[in-house]
Length: 470
Image (cartoon, rainbow, N blue to C red; front, side):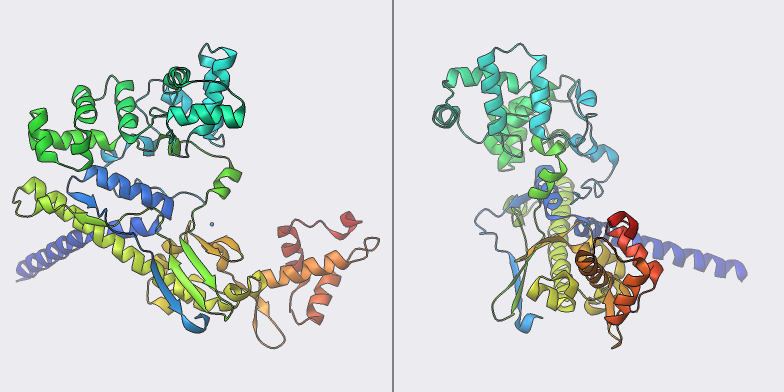
């Protein structure tokens, strides 16, 4: 009898484990997408579209942003975009720091605070260039977009070089210098189109599998590739769908934005921050919350998948639908969380004064939304909100209670620091205020703060002790 009960328990445990495994992929995908800031998400969507032959952009969609109004006013680091791939082998090389270039390991070990421009200029010394060619190379490097591609034609660049730089050249000279630039790292730099970018990367790596097939695909059948006509490509390349899938895995390792793989200076990063949320306040105090979509396209499953019963096709269709659903769930989670934050920090969003930020923890937002604390943490991490008063990391809106005022209201550390800053700015520089005196002044203003707490906040603000302020 005991043995029978044991077998029953083992069967129940097995069934429970199977159920968890069935739910896991969708849940993990949602978690990973929610963690990503808008820049990383855009890259992840682009990669998914490249990898999944049955996932397409809805070209006619005007890409509306998700927007909700509330009447009455109710920390950047790009996220890791590698975590929802099936295995390490499936992760694109440019996301892991690897590259097909022979000297890539040396190149990618440079100080990651250098800008793309700095790194390209350093590589100029590896080539014999005349003074005029150096000027043209500097000009071309300065004309690259953030993605590392050249967005203007050489004819236009030649005209602009003369008009704006006083640099006389022609398309033939620029073509020659551009050919040299396209030998720089990272591979694909200086390409004039996505097609040229991918071809350059494949040609640079003689060891890449199916190299000749990939060059032929990009060179002769690029339109079929961009429209995901995989059946036609298989016929034209004289290969089967299994081999097409192998080609897709190699394509996925290529970088459509070679300039994006290179580090940037902190100041450059700050200037290029893309906010994940837009919060606006009108003259009546009405707050509008918008979820930024950046350049995210709307996605659909290819109509060509209708009626397909092939297991290979079915696998990608299910994966694509799961990805679309996860993006929608992410949008709903992000909006609901941001609306709760705005509601809890209404005075700040109406006035822009950080001292008006109320004590707010992850638990407070979780309670307001009904989400788990871990979900609120993912939404808040590495996300930014743009307001009429500036762009702020979402984490900055979370504040802890420092003490209570005489009226029993919660007081945040920022409010205490603001008061300390005011006292110290107004002090007699011949007789600076001691921490003890500052604590007494805070008490007089209704802040119940101890002297040691004053010292802690003063140190956090980078303000020296009294004797050093004379």
